[in-house]
Length: 182
Ligand SMILES: N[C@@H](CCC(=O)N[C@@H](CS)C(=O)NCC(=O)O)C(=O)O
Image (cartoon, rainbow, N blue to C red; front, side):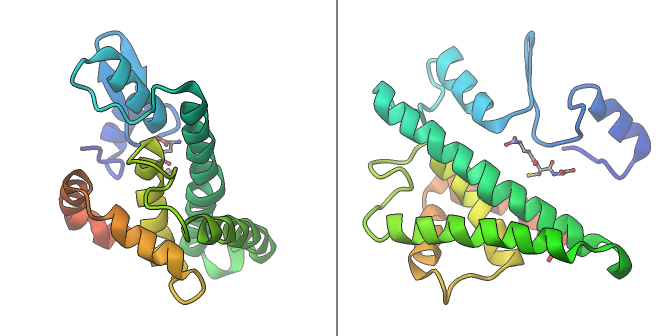
């Protein structure tokens, strides 16, 4: 658990996560701040680590590409939109948000088309992309409710909430939901 509201605890946390982002994985000599890298680290370091990246190099590349798509065009966009909403009204950036919303709509239009024919985000099974897609689409639905315009994406988010590991993570996060920006 990271309490960044407490200045002393935040200063302590910045020693392992210089940008203050969560999560951070500390394992022997490794300190990893990127979730996708944590997933690959776990899969390659521990025999029981879940392998969320296909062995086939072409499929693995597709998964990595989609993982970047969710981080760069959905998750980061939503983080900036949320940050803008938390600002005092006179310091908000309407033009910046318009540009971000354009990226968001482009990303969701691509997904809407793709998810018309796919079960999991990359197509064949649950992969690292679904780990990126679940929180990104969860945040999207809260900040910019999208169900009427992107029904396939909305159905996909419900499917993503299904696996027991996702349900467990969501249940664990529920006590903190009230802190999420709207
Ligand atoms: N690229 C990082 C992003 C991590 C990230 O943005 N985490 C959010 C919470 S889910 C955070 O720390 N937000 C606080 C902030 O940006 O200050 C990853 O995928 O691990």
